[in-house]
Amino acid sequence: MNNVKKYFKIAVFLIALIITVLQYSFAQNYYVYNNIEDKKMSINAGLWSAKLTGTLFAPSTNFTTDLSDDLGFGNTKTGFYFDFNYKLSNLNTVGFSYFNVEHKAVKTLTRNVTLPAEPVDINVASNTTLFSNIRNSAFDLFYKRYVNTGENYDFYGMIGIRFNNFKADYSTNTAALASFKGNAPALFLGLGGKFNIGSNLNAFYEVNGLSVSLNSSSKNKFFQYSLGLNYRFTENWALSVGYRYLSSKFEDDLNRNADLKLQGLNFGLNLKF
Image (cartoon, rainbow, N blue to C red):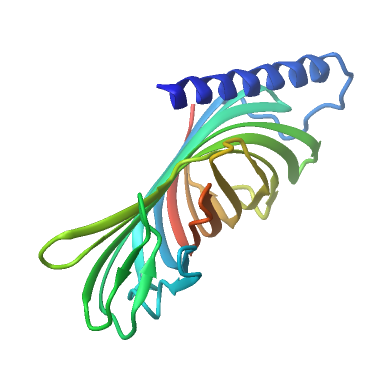
């Protein structure tokens, strides 16, 4: 319940900040937005074929576990993503997004390892067949401010808040061993834009980072970027193909941490209405 109240206060703060920015924006005289579109809302949904690599750190023994070499990750799994954008005006957009990717691995350990776990780290002996499951998801609220537009391009800055959800579970073939999770909100800044290549084709990009954790007991920092091509085959529908990279680091108040990297191709469908 305390976390719910805390996250509610954070969301209220972000909304108040957006309203302040909007009031300032609408008070200014801006140039005409050349790339006018009548549609106010858009939905993007698709699949992300993401490869997982990274490390886990257990402070009790200062042990670092490599997800690929030690636990057998480095595999590619398909997750999904979804985002919604609402245009308040030609220069101001608000919205939310969500993604979820889950990886599983089975590996017979070639050395003794110490894994970060709750309430205490867990030691696992060499030659143990370990089943590992890592899930990473995030929900973002954001505001985009278009600061430069042209007939064939646009550019925006953004501010948002990310609610992360990370969890690692470890088990043998007979029993569950332990788990480690992180759930910390973070403010972030970003920028993005698109370039029209033809009447129905454009290239897009977006970069997010400079994240600031808002939870004193656990921390999350991340950097991500995406780029790709968007082909519009009707007035309302478009297909996209691109590449997404995400680096996330979760750390709790006991210095247990997970440093994860997800990267791979994504394919999506866009609807404007």
